[in-house]
Amino acid sequence: MKTSIPKTTGIVMLAVLFIASCAPKEEPKTKDWKRGQDFSTVSFSVEGFDGPEAVRYDEELDVYFVSCFVGSTSGDANGYVSRVSSNGVIEELRFMTGTEEYPFDAGRGMYITGDTLWVADHSGVHYFNKKSGDHLGFVDFSDFETGFINDIVEKDGDLYVTDTGQRKLYRIRDFEAELVKDNLPIMPNGITKLPDGNLVFAPWNDGPEIYQYDVETDMLSVYGTAAGSDNYDGIEFYDGALITSTQFDSSLHLMIDGKDELFIKLPGRPADIAIDPNRGVVAVPYVALNRVDFWVLKE
Image (cartoon, rainbow, N blue to C red):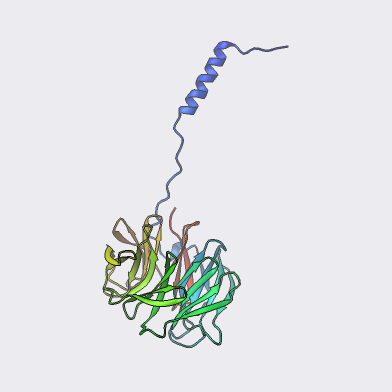
């Protein structure tokens, strides 16, 4: 038996479908920065390092690398890089170490290009296979009058390395180091890349101006003015904001549209931070505490 739908019922159904299609779709809620945090809101902590100075997150492997001083900041040949899971388990404490020919002295800032992890130390920049931990080589800075080789970032296939002690910026091109900028107006500590490609420095001294550098034009300009005075260490750009760690007031700072503010109050003096952009988590190392803390940035 064939059943027919009354014409009026069909008209009503079409009207309902039309209204539903025209109704505004609910937009996903925008997460806000979790301001006012301190150690009571830390997500988790990882202990057991020897003077952790810098952290770098790798999206492909979903792990953190932690470079460690191990005592002296000069040539004692016992530095190492640890491999830590994204949920805070040390998978291998001494995952990367130096060799007899190229000893690893007091690990510092890191950067990853492809399968290679680059890490600064007392006398140059080592590079390792990020998957196996194998030592691949070393870029020697001994021809330069260095002070404190510190942090690394990549731009157009070249690596840029800060020298905090000598107010210098170096470039590594084809595995050879060269001086790019001398007599910088600040002592550059951390370094990162902005969305427009400019490089930006964390000022260790002579702050609170945060400078950016245009590689193409060789021009320096002020990016913003920090709320603290100086002693800035780590620096990362995430979701429209510049996040810095400062030992001046033991905190993370947040700079949005040139306005800087204290963001997270820390339990110790922070070093070079890292960000997991997928989870929105920041990793904060403390050389003196032998620990790395992890906070969620937004909620």
